[in-house]
Length: 391
Image (cartoon, rainbow, N blue to C red; front, top):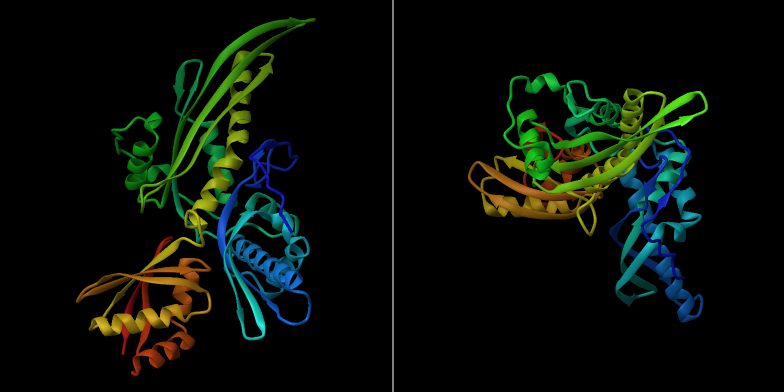
């Protein structure tokens, strides 16, 4: 019952650039997910029951990871297909695990674990089933890449266009550069984190990707009647989440290209180095935006107006905690005008907003508050939902 432990490796793949998890080089990655498994007591020996509970916990962890990769509007049939497919070889997607506790509960044996789900293998398997991996809720993304060829900065960046195309294919809302026309940036792009934050704020973006890509000539060779010019390209890219300021992806890559002219060699080296850097860059962004570092999902900030007392805020917290797709809720702020919760939710901000306006949630809220009270969503973005109490 011991899963394979996979070191981070580079592996060849023959899949098009638009697949965010696969390209000529791709790095395996994992995220830690909490899960609970259960098995019936009395039907087998104690060690067999324990193994069944552990495997059930693995299956739940993998299904949770698979759910993150699927669009919030995925059909029930698609969810069932993915669940049955990944469950058939669940051990292939568990890179490591830690048993937190295990106990007997009446007729059942239960086990709580923290499992590292190999999201590279899992994401690849989901794409092979024909599903797009897009779960992020259309994060607004700004890109600024400085590109140097022949020692000169070029006004049109080949690499920026390739990154933009890949992100848009995966459901990112990429900001038009003209939206920040006339804005001067104080931080140099090789300053990484600070430059990305400045770009994110200037474009009012959830995520900013910045960096530099440059080339250098590395040699000329005469082969027969042809003269071959070789160029090497260097890519140094970083992505930052504006709401927290954290670096969610950082990639460095190099590539070479021999061509019949130095100009063509430099252009092709830039295309090659971008192709190598993109999968790791986008995968790390997807994983970071989907998941809280170390465990579970990233929290969505829910800001509620109209709660009249701390006891009503606590009733709202209880109702939020009772939602099927909620893993945890924390009351972050209470005030006369606004109350803020962090909701760790299995879905996007849009999906959470839709559920908050549902009759089912209104009934739950009435159960905890004892009064007729519901929520009306007044606005949302990638990482937050704003709502008002309706009485």
